[in-house]
Image 1 (cartoon, helix red, strand yellow):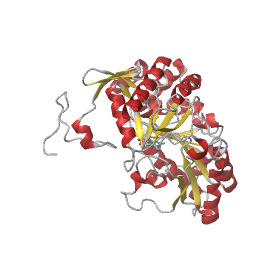
Image 2 (cartoon, rainbow, N blue to C red; image 1 turned 135 degrees about the vertical axis):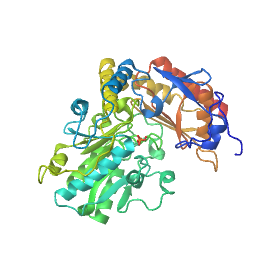
Image 3 (cartoon, rainbow, N blue to C red; image 1 turned 90 degrees about the horizontal axis):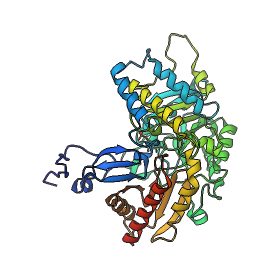
Image 4 (spheres, helix red, strand yellow; image 1 turned 60 degrees about the horizontal axis):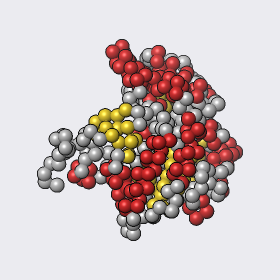
Length: 443
Ligand SMILES: Cc1ncc(COP(=O)(O)O)c(C=O)c1O
């Protein structure tokens, strides 16, 4: 485009190359957010927009929470930065201790990163290095899953299974293979909670072990619920089966809980909801309520301990980030944990999920709805794609909802909902009524 587009607020929009955005479409009709409080955003026209997706699956306690804001402000004035290599500050330890009280049993070591993508890279490297330090250096292969999303760095897109995120970027990591995804609408469409069919998809792992041999495989990584590819809930027994196969072959199991962590499914972590404990677990997003970038990897004691050998003055794990356990992020995370505890938010999704599920499934029968999936406060409503134009129908629903004052998210032709955990019934009604209206208008 020759002319530089302008927002209503007269902001210049040209220089910013936006991430994961249809830049040209956006700059013709910008959607600018200027404030937020509780369940609502304020846009640059002063409209209130109901947040149906917790920002981006991260603002679990709702926006602008006083404890978190104060914690960040106080920290900025007290200690702006402390080097994280060979040095530390007390809140990093305090946060790690608080977190491992919440994690599934045994995941009692916390390593800090700045994002979900970095947490994934860290977990993958930890897995490969773990096998090496215990003398099984041939275990370098990583297994991901089709339709998996594990962030955007090279390890994450290699084990990930979203073609759009992979096809532009060459050959990525070598030695990666994938099991099939579990989406099976022919058998499971409109299931509530965990679908009945599909535990056997986990047996793909046995096939890959037969192909590559377990002695070459370091780890398997999956999201307990695949969010970014359209809210795919694991079939009953599927995660248990993955765990059994990993145990049988001494392969590490990694759960990527970047979106399912911190209360999304009715427990602090989806591992607890599904009763399956991984060996490594990645988190981000809800860790700081989205306020300051931060991620983490939780590791079982035996993984950590395998590294603790050799001369004591030497670094055990050659990995870390300048901003690992940044003081502002630690303060935000501590304020977030306080807020979650005070408001009972880490289990609130289990109280609200019945109402949420009923409201969401009432969209069955609306134009072009071909499947609905839900768990805790996560929902997916899949639409029949427009012929030859995948993703376009759902995107038009997203735009319509925004115009009507509700923020939803779309991935492919699935409308994904993941509201803040403070949501009340009237907000659920408002979101679902708005989506329903948009579906009817688009028919
Ligand atoms: C499961 C999962 N892993 C990793 C990521 C990447 O997180 P980030 O965008 O913080 O790098 C995401 C982001 O949505 C995610 O959903």
